[in-house]
Image (cartoon, rainbow, N blue to C red):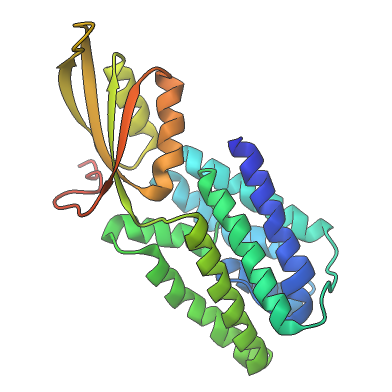
Length: 271
């Protein structure tokens, strides 16, 4: 289901770009928007530009955001890049404003599905997640600032009508993503398992979070168990659930919303 979600979400983004946004010179957010600019003003295809711009960020993110997350993101970027290359640019609707709104909504739907499938569409999302983990502030605010640069480029390069339509598209995309997926909320995960050491090793290898481990005893069975506690961002929830099932499908997991975090939220760097 996770692979299916990444494929579906990525293909939705491709259709939004080539059928609604690019025909009207309306840009998407982030590096995708910059890739569109490259495709519009140079002979380079948008799909190839998207891959070349994303590749360095994916390499950096591989070490900082978890191997599975980045591998899923690479898969999504490849699908989008190939899709943009293969699917012809075709103007579905004549109205630029309607195309901006609907294209932005489709983009947000696709990106949200990819997020919920433990991946990303690359670009500014990777930068935002890396910075957010280091500084712990909402990704949305950072992405908005970076997207402002895309809007300014659109205005100076094309015209300010195109820039305003780009603003509409980016705004709608953000609203749809937020409706599908909330990324900055914190969750506390409590895992009760008889495979504590294996679970600890697996989570620390694949997640950028620390763990607290408590010894426990089953109230009914009287068997020894471990209780693992960690706090994560909401966008990591699907990933950690999959990791838990890989080690112990019968583990008891309690997930609660966290109002505030004090102290060390990020895993300390090795000295």
